[in-house]
Amino acid sequence: MDRDEDMIARRMLLAGAAGMAMAGLIPVAFAKTVKPGVKGLIANASDTALDRLAQPGAFYADTAVRILLPGAGGKLASKLMGAGDRLGLTTKLTRSLNDAGGKAAGEAKPIFRAAIDNLGWGDVPSLVSKNDGATRYLQSSAGGVLGEKVRPLIVGALESVGAYRQLDQLSGNSQLLSLAGISHDSLTGSVTDQALKGIFLYMGNEEMALRRDPGKLLKRIF
Image (cartoon, rainbow, N blue to C red; front, side):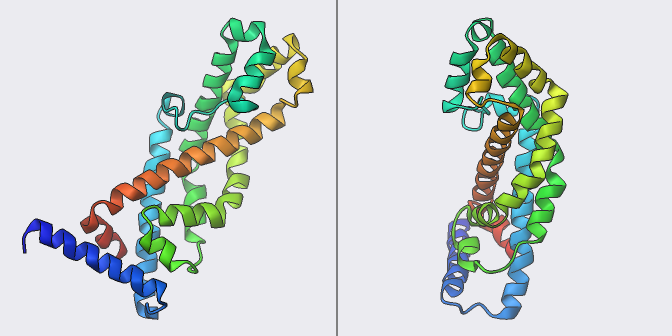
């Protein structure tokens, strides 16, 4: 069997597994074998995504995951900051938010690993058949818990990079920020939500990359 035939055979095997899952025909013994493999797959995707986003400047450099100020993708805050925006203080604050996201990502591995370990086994078709099925399943089933656990990391990171101090400085120059509801709390919530979306996007991409190599995927699952 040449390489192309081998790849086709592996894909058919995986497709067959997905089909059995959808039909409810996967036996208990098979499920017990597959479950740790899928968890290993998503754990690897999680670790890799977090490592990539923890690199200095990673969040800001990628516009797909760049963390922006609250309010219309940062446009409202920028408008309200007036002179601060013209002096480049808005850009400085935005960079700080992204630095905070990267810092939190570097500390989040144990939190994501715990969430992955606590995943149930109630959505076999999605996990096996979709290119980013495991990531979607984690996001839908544990996204809320992850948000609660990641938020304190974001708070610490925002304090560490001076984002709260910068916001206070800009708010002192324009009370419109406070009137618009842009506060420490709203900033924290916005950065947490955006950081998680970025992490899940990267996780999904990592999972899809693994699935594009059927050999690696089958080794991880079976």
